[in-house]
Image (cartoon, rainbow, N blue to C red; front, side, top):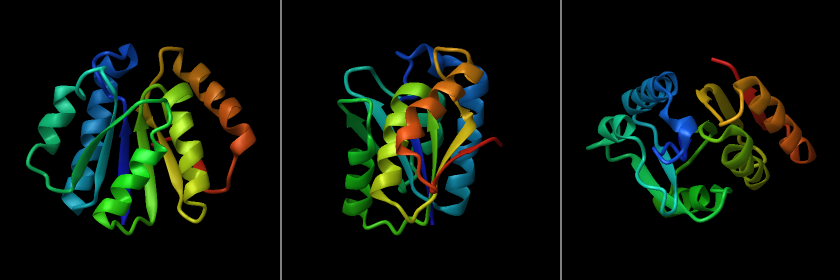
Length: 156
């Protein structure tokens, strides 16, 4: 099964407030709910809740999990949820903000932690405070030293 990981879609982060981004993530969440696949929402500690548009969609859906993280890298929180819930994940899709900070930190660790599982970063569901094209370049540069065959940028 696939697992959707949503990173730091909190109002505190300017990049998370974009209506196009919220809409794209809400649509992705609906796909996962329709297939009854797990959704993991990571929130940066003390920066508030995930934007209400996303929380409204997952409300009542039993296969979603929310965890706070204390650093840019949320891979440990993802692993904890997978272990606790005994999830058999065959593929990850990752989205959220900031692409060139928390997203890159989380997915590079996930790619090492799960070397045989694809970790797909869904670019149409990511944003950053820097220009989008610039953040993709920064993401690529940041992840270069950790590049793994299972870490892929996906344009939807």
